[in-house]
Amino acid sequence: MSDKKVIFVAGGAGYIGSHMTRLLLEEGFKPIVFDNLSTGFREFVPKEARFVRGDLRRERDIENALERYRPSAVMHFAAALVVPESVSDPLKYYENNVAAAITLLRAMRRQKVKRIIFSSTAAVYGEPQRIPVREDNPACPVNPYGRSKLMIEAILKDTAYAYPEDFRYISLRYFNVAGAHPAGGIGQKGPQITHLIPNILRAAMGSKKLTVFGKDWPTPDGTCIRDYIHVVDLCQAHLLALKAFDRGVNNEIFNLGSSKGFSVKAMIRAVEQVTGKKVPHRYGPRRPGDPARLIASSKKAREILGWRPRYGLDEIIETAWQWENR
Ligand code: UDP
Image 1 (cartoon, rainbow, N blue to C red):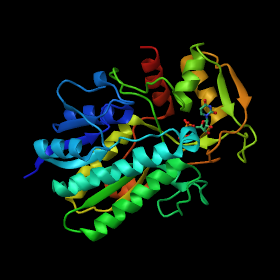
Image 2: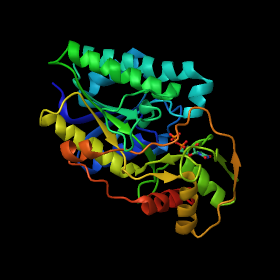
Image 3: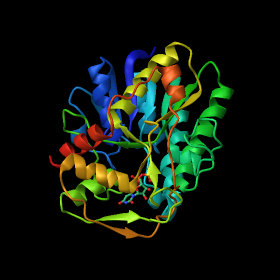
């Protein structure tokens, strides 16, 4: 028998996974963090959570952990997620993301774990036909990262079709996740930080000039537009998805974004305002694999999950700034 309160958090030592683990503990769940620490950090895992060091590509590692802890659901955050790297090293993405997901699903089947919440991405849309983009917009990813996540969604769908009694999923398509837990201690960290907000903040701190990738995009100011969402709001949606399973919400896809778009230039201005610092920057060429505009319609998550993001852009920047200044 599975234990309803036990949740298996694959990639729980990473940026988003560690926020999720904290939230699960706050809500009285028992998170089991499974992570190979390739990009995660042991110190991100609270001492109240169980930690299993293991690799998703080794079925034995996962099965042992599932067998031992009998979770009622899996949350799957473990993935390679850097768009430009996926363009230069696609096989890493198909192996780390697609192959690992298959191994995880096989282990879940064998251990009779029936529910998974999957971390998908707005990158599955590619260059959307309509903005704000809805879940039924055609998915035509423009980089291997997005393709790897879309392949996994297809695998989840086929698996749920094949085993309707024994396997159900909810896939959450994240837009641009940023910010950090207001209480501190966890945040975006790593030797190669490629994401915009940490890079702008580092430029504001004077450590490295920001390069804006392209100023000739088909947008009003020529820079790319993205939809930024606070990591704690994102994790709240996962808790709501867990509850939604109990109401019979199954095999669904939800966008998670703020439904507001900000260009790279607008983000620089916002950071300057919140931090009171100048952001030294220069313009470089477009970055391979980038779409021009991504803004979510989150209507479905609001209506079906009852999700309400609480943090605005200023709080995203403030909490990320606190983290960078730790
Ligand atoms: N970007 C940029 N300079 C940077 C990092 C990112 O101009 O140092 C741009 C990037 O081209 C994209 C947007 O900021 O248009 C968001 O990029 P990020 O890597 O944060 O997220 P993505 O949307 O690729 O997942």
